[in-house]
Length: 261
Image (cartoon, rainbow, N blue to C red; front, top):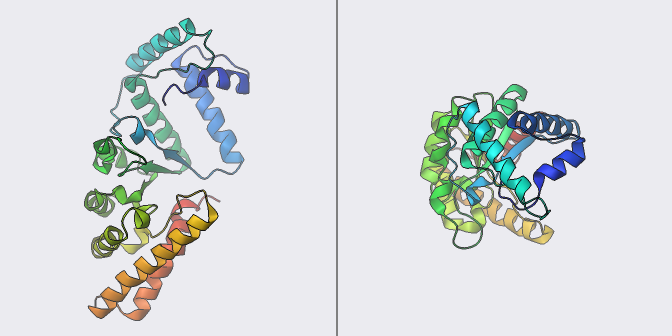
């Protein structure tokens, strides 16, 4: 995470502990994860594509520990500035990402990854190519990987990954308002290439109720148009199209994201 605030100090105060090593950090993570699971969270989410490429290499613990201690020393030198956080090197980030996925694997959780287009301007689009995650899918086979935003504009890659790996799922969150036409084209391709129980047809990605409603209206129209086209082409029957619509808008999100409730 970026050093936006003193996460170390906050965790030490919250859990009445001292973080002096990478092991200390990981133990606090396990405590926080289990506490939040008991309070009702159902999965994890990563938005690190906004800060770095989402390729997470396997790192030796000793190398990660040495880098973490160096970062702690630098943080402690700047301690009078309480708003200064811990600048975590990518080596440590990679190790911690694998640790969190191991924890998710043990608990059978899902994790959402921001993939594709970044909010705002001047983001580095290539950081969020879903193909960068491929080394994780087989290693953590009990984790369900929910690829947000269809990886736009990499939605062909997203389709291939979902087709290849049983634990990779396509999430159309945001895609209908990024580009309605592209969302329709992508969904048509998804339905040809990927089992339809692996596609989530809508995700709000808004904090404003009116905007959520508007986004859902666009999503429903898009899904209806795509299914109508496949009925016209005799790829689907009306009955099959209705079943798929129910899966995209209700059953799939429930099964993939809420199966731990």
